[in-house]
Length: 90
Image 1 (cartoon, rainbow, N blue to C red):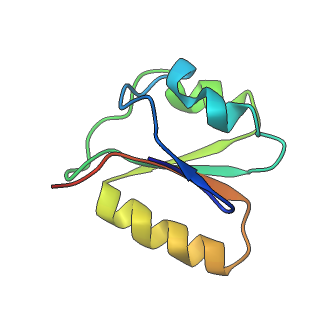
Image 2 (cartoon, one colour):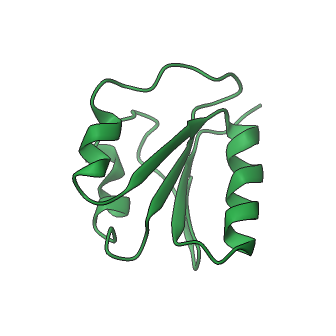
C-alpha cells in the first residue's frame, strides 16, 4: 500500500525499486520523507534505493512495517510532508 497524507492506493510492488515507487517520485515536490515498511522483520534495503530517492529530494526511512506505521502517524501529527510504502504483515 502507498499511503499519502490525502489518499492511499495499491502499490504495484512489493519490488523495492525506483520504478515501483514512481507514484511517490511524481509528487516529490510535495513530500520530504518516504517511510518504507519492508515487512514483518527489518531487512536490508535495496542497493541504490536511498541514493535514487535522494536525487528526487526524498529522504528514505527504512524499517519493518509495524515501526513504519507508528512512525508515519507520529510524523503526520507533526505536519511533516511524507508518504509511506508498506508491505502487509500477516
